[in-house]
Image (cartoon, helix red, strand yellow):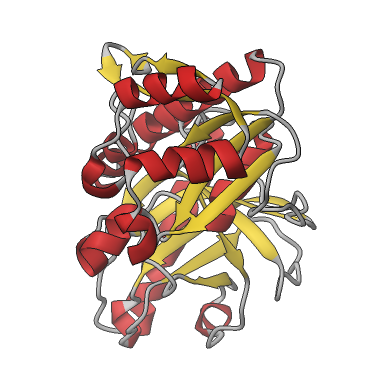
Length: 312
């Protein structure tokens, strides 16, 4: 997922023309989502997505909610890359949670988004108490003049592609399966900040991206790539707490191989994870940690020598 298209794009708006609309979390914007978005594009109408922040499950479950596949920024980038023209992001709060399914249709779909075509998954539910369903949408569509298309499940090898399934793959270190369902390598985006420069002292300078803003579905040491405005590099990547040095917050550190000390501070970068090398470990001293990182770099080189194009 490339982080550099301009995001000076209205993510809340009132439509000026009839639109083809889809609604959902779009967490990860995976291949099932992409198939749904193609349905919008085939209509010939301007394409629009309605999504929410926080995600409804985060509003209702708080810290018990499963980790996201994508931040709001990452999701917006992926939607724009899939040719969505208008993105409306509603704050999911108690008022929206209490909004009846009927009012959701008339106030949001009809008045705000000027929906001419609505494409949603076969199991789509909405409104207070999840009372709204496809039958209600079709009934209101006949009254207000919008067409409802039911998107069937998107299957790969007989399995339904879902954000939940991708999350399970990532947590199990099965990055190739996750990439197949996403349609691209799993990536995390963020702004590079100054760290404690321990990596540089050990001989492995890193680009540091704090992850305390959200839980992520991956931990460990990975072979991957760092994509930046200055260039793209193969990288050995650590995601975790850095237990050897008593770390307390999740951080992503990417050591770019064969890079001529790029200055990435303050820049938005994307870090792709292609292969999990090992779990994070706590070492007895820094010399042992340095030897482990040395080995990670060797294994990263070996992986990309054997897999120059493939995710895993």
